[in-house]
Length: 212
Image (cartoon, rainbow, N blue to C red):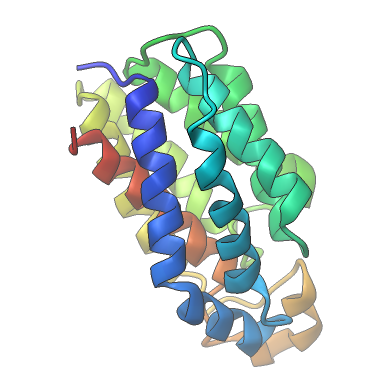
């Protein structure tokens, strides 16, 4: 089973839905250790993406769909989330450019490029209590699943499960990047909102792979 543009569009639509559903949760997480706008900003960004999906060309590739998300988020989402996620989707699109269908190796390349885009933009490392703490275990799990012979859906499920665990694992950490870093040990006990939203988006990718 390979994944095509229809999967990418399902992923984007599912992402918009899950961000809307968890908007208040993300706002609350960000209010605890940030400025409280993460859920609102992401919801606005993905809401802006949805109508643009109807304008995708009939021969659009998965990369075209992801690039659409990137440019829309960069132009509409404020705070740190816009540049971080925009870069993630842009780098992901670049990694699969020209491919009409994505096999397992392409999925791993997509996820790796997205993670590397976040690292490039945010200069964060694992353990800094950022979205990198969700993306890095997701990439590692995806690569392991590919090596173990999993199909595309299995690779994405492994990535999402690892991202969810990674998001939970940010709770006992002291933040070293972003606004949360100003809180020092007061950030302990709070989940990073970017890691949580990353886990939600990666779970949407996995769900979209099993929903035709």
